[in-house]
Image (cartoon, rainbow, N blue to C red):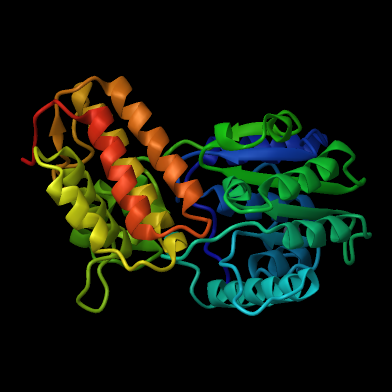
Length: 378
Ligand SMILES: [Zn+2]
């Protein structure tokens, strides 16, 4: 099975295809936009475009050997790196690098088998120094089959969430400062503001906007084969992102992973906004005292709810009628300060902290920042 063709974003694709024909594509790009909107997919398409020897005004030819390899995620000169969970048994840097390569190969095999996977994994993932060093060694080798090689670093934000973060970012920075010839680097990021400014300044930004609700629904029906009514429901929750819509897809009688995370995050937010602090303590105690790292996705969902809270208090309509959020009448700027605390907690969660203390402390901070204004659920 191949990855499905790129969906939507026609004007962006055509502009990139024309730049490729003129030979004016930058050597280092930073694709940014909302989660699940297709940034890594676009990076793969761009990789195919660069490796295809006979591209046209609309993009890669789609039928040559290079295109077929790229579509099957098997092109030896198209290197796709994404954040991975830390392997359990890796005592030395060499063993860690091997274990990460093995995990990457398994993930690629799983994506070949089933390309329509939501972006939520429930596990903490990062780009480790060992993996960035391996990428750097490869980048200085010659392309193995074609004229060019392409390195994709998906979710580059995940460089910032681990113990050797600054070393990993600096290793990448050195590579971008003196990029080897015939090599293109494509980074993707949800929040480019959280990348090192020096990394940002070495890359050309490319914003990928959300798709329209109609485009998402059409994809879900035509490509994913989801019945019309369910496709419409998922599209209404998607915020213009296919990866996000898939995260709300029900399976085996259970809600989708994003729906579950959203409900859990909503409980935390309600506990933080409740009149008595007792609920916040109770909520914190429900977490297992082990593995704070697994809180990452939940904290992301909480941050997203805070953004919606700010939008709602500023008078924006709810993202979807199927999607009620808390009502809150406070100053949206206070929500921004609260979101910053959630991000700090997310960084702390990468270390050896007790999740109960982490969540308890965070909820108390949120109470302090957001407190004093009445809140209720519709
Ligand atoms: Zn081709």
